[in-house]
Length: 235
Figure 1: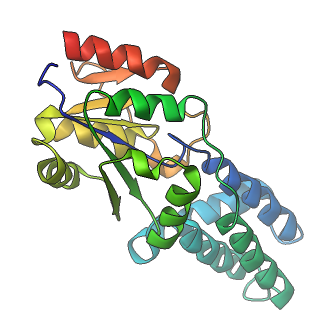
Figure 2 (figure 1 turned 30 degrees about the horizontal axis):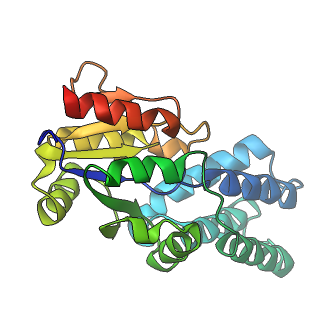
Figure 3 (figure 1 turned 90 degrees about the horizontal axis):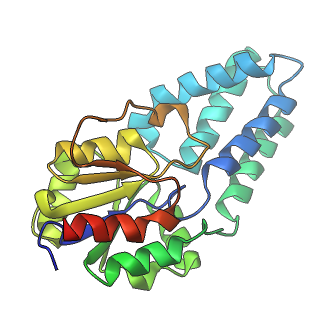
């Protein structure tokens, strides 16, 4: 086996299983609750701005999302939002936290292909309790040599993870649906970044791809990953 890649990291949400669609469905519900106070586009833009402001305090995940919805509801109603609406927003968050995991097509096969040739790590960000729940329910947890739940994904974080669990970032590879969090920072740390678009993406996760970089690759779905991995290892 080529030593060009010794360790492979997988993102979790919207790479191995569905996640963003539940946020978007809840946003539709949120807009319906507040329709008498604010039109949907304006409301959701104000929610997005609240999420951006709150990331440093709340981090990523459902709990911070619910708190940002409550803050936005208070904002657009001039603090007149009813207790019933607040209760419904809290219940919506609980429903999201209890939603069964749905694997994306070929997720199991992609991880199996990686672990047959390299060490594999799950690298995800968000609320630790919720992420641990999803990993356990996914049925994929035992396939990984290590699991890292982090608060942010930047080159320095990837460097530390691949130093700790592999032979450094230059022999590491990261597969994910976020250019901003999964692909670009891994490439900037010296490794390979594999982009697998999901179709639904939180606006905060948008970034332009490093198209001219030799270690950037894009595949349409996880079904194409085993062939790409073999090609990189054999090159």
